[in-house]
Length: 424
Image 1 (spheres, rainbow, N blue to C red):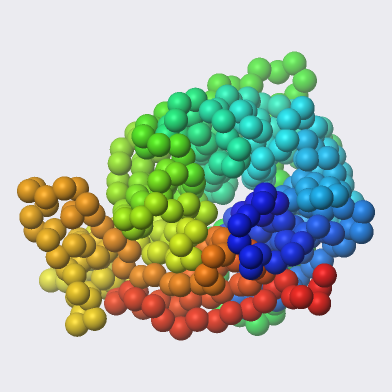
Image 2: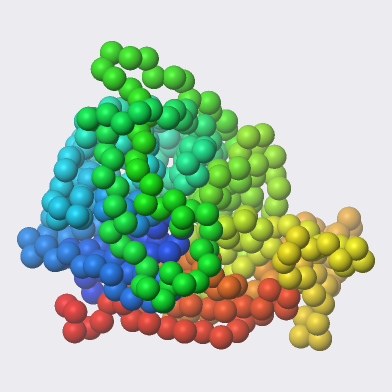
């Protein structure tokens, strides 16, 4: 969430330029007008702060909990040029190399083998090495928001970004190769921001956390070699301009929303098949974030309506056979639910039984759980442990919502202030 652009909100925290989760949602980074900070999510705790009296940071992209970070300068007095990506080694407290461009950098994504840089009309892909070589360049429609998504699985590198036409998504299957150690590779990927000791006693949230200290293994491209062609698939996702794109961990599913913000669509990246169409609401809204849970069975969405919605993506397990894949029977009908659930457990209109006769709106699937955050405040969301939704807000607050996987609805709420007034 880039907060360096002007906003009509009166509650935004002064000096906060950027906020974003890492790949497994175990940490988040905050870019400030005088440095950046790293926070652990569960339990909430500040892990590191770097103060730069000489300038601000508008993008901080983490690589799981690794010591390597991608930084872009921003704010009224940028630490670095907004046209430059700085790869920062926090174990050495210094930059190790830079990538410079002619246009302003809109976004950056990292994998252990890739650096993806988003410009207003292009997406560049580099190998992650001491002397990064450009592997691919893709053209896009105007992309001022820097929309891009990159899968985090070490076995598959899927990249998603706007196509050349309005509402289209380009899905790129980037080639991956395993190579032996080399003097040109970045092998010193340390676990610089480990979770607190009490967190280590809990079971891992996903397989990602176990591999978060693995070495970076860049794609083996030497000067003069031929770069394999990436496989590209175009998905005509919306008729309007895109406002948000997200991929699940292995890149098999892509979720998107348009500027209208009423529908979220989920596609299969390999075929472009529409898997789910979910309705956030009836009124126009700006979608700030879409996130999958670790097993890609749920989706959470945040918008400028100050509400986070949670949707189910899979069908409710067969209650007769008792097979539920080890999960809860979410989406049960209760006295608190005025409308019948869809096969996935999401809410539907009470007139959904007449969907063949009524407009499409009445057959829509609505969220089965939703949470209200601070009014008139931009926010992003992600899944935590134990049916928890984590929310980072532009007012400098961090929220944790706990929902019932069977009944949905709104439940317990914890709040922390990660950017306090006395910090500035």
